[in-house]
Amino acid sequence: MTTAQPGILDPIPRLARYLSFSQRPQVDVSAALAALVDMVDGEELVLGIGPSLALHLGCDVDGLRVFPARVGAGFEVPSTPAALWCWIRGSDRGDILHRSLQVQRAVAAAFVVDEVIDAFQYRNALDLTGYEDGTENPQGNDATDAALVAGRGPGADGSSFVAVQQWVHDLELFESKPAGERDDIIGRRCSDNEELADAPESAHVKRTAQESFEPEAFVLRRSMPWADEFGAGLNFVAFGKSFDAFEAQLVRMIGAEDGIVDALFTFTRPVSGAYFWCPPLDGGRLDLRLLNM
Image 1 (cartoon, rainbow, N blue to C red):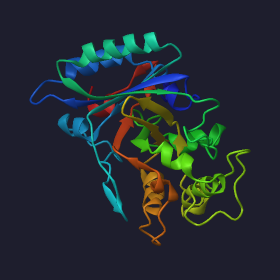
Image 2 (image 1 turned 60 degrees about the vertical axis):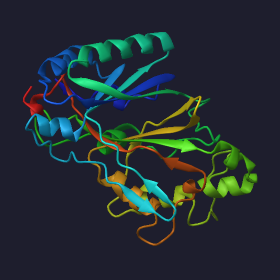
Image 3 (image 1 turned 180 degrees about the vertical axis):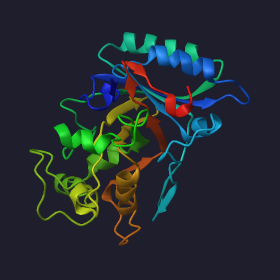
Image 4 (image 1 turned 180 degrees about the horizontal axis):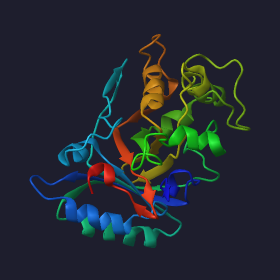
């Protein structure tokens, strides 16, 4: 039975670790990918395949492409592609560490870990600004329809495309602003999460209102806060049946359509951006038939 990797649709975990890998030059990746097939359960370990790896295998996964670099007024949205992406989910930091080390050992001959981001759930799924993240997430069947590929046949159905960005917040700057100005940046009241009827056009909620696009641009967000000795912010993760909805939101956020830039850019900035294809499971095992595996 073909299914999605269940971690895509499950609620965010208490703790997580994100791993991004680049491919070693001129190596056979088949043994490493075979090891991942045995390790990935899709629940505690969600796997994504980058465009460069698919091309290396001579495969054209329909819809998989490179994250588009964008430039706005005074800021950049970078593109930082990777070959592999792992989202390790759990509630015990030690267990997550050991699973991370197992993954790295299993693929070490073919892939180099480029980035490790440890993330966590803040209170009841809040961003570190104190505002709720993912309020407008689709639910139930709507979430499945937004996040998963359907109607394309075995090996594709149940898969998902994921956009990943690490955002670095200037929390001191944000917290120095009056409460009303902070609400206007987000477009919601922090106190009760109610949307502001008179929010400015630059408010994040207005810039990314999923039902306001034609066609509607729904994605399933599974973002989590991160923090280390160098900074803090949000690891943005959005699953979709394609990248079209995410890209429609991104174009509007940077003001490419009407010159109105999302107010988020007044206190936070993305430092990475990558696209991955998350294969389905077949009988509980990772289904890589589209990669000829």
